Amino acid sequence: MTSECLFCRIVAKELPSTVVYETEEILAFRDINPQAPTHVVVIPKAHYPDVASLAEADPALAGAVLAAAAAVARQEGVAESGYRLVFNTGPDAGQSVFHVHCHVLGGRSIAWPPG
Ligand code: AMP
Ligand code: ZN
Image 1 (cartoon, protein in one colour):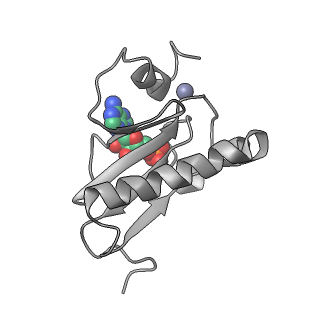
Image 2: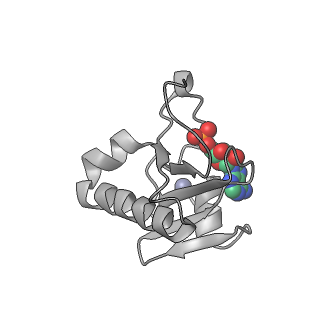
């Protein structure tokens, strides 16, 4: 999968990224097209195409992604002001990279639904 998947290539350091958090099983890096002042993508290093397949195959790892997202929010200084975690899944959600990733969005009002 490494040669075909963008995020596997980032994990393998074949492509550059701005890493903000890393453990043995998790990598978090800045989104290349940020939608908020804080926009970090948190992924398991192991390849799963989406959050449903991750949660089914390895619930503990899915939990580790959430814990890492919370740690990133603290580290980025948005834990108190608040933040949104997003797992785009499938076409209607506009998922474009099929390696499960949690968007950590914060640093501005980002309530959903808006208003
Ligand atoms: P999604 O639409 O949920 O699949 O999100 C994919 C995200 O990956 C988008 O927000 C992209 O901006 C981001 N992205 C794509 N390529 C890179 C890259 N090389 N480094 C960091 N983020 C990326
Ligand atoms: Zn992958």
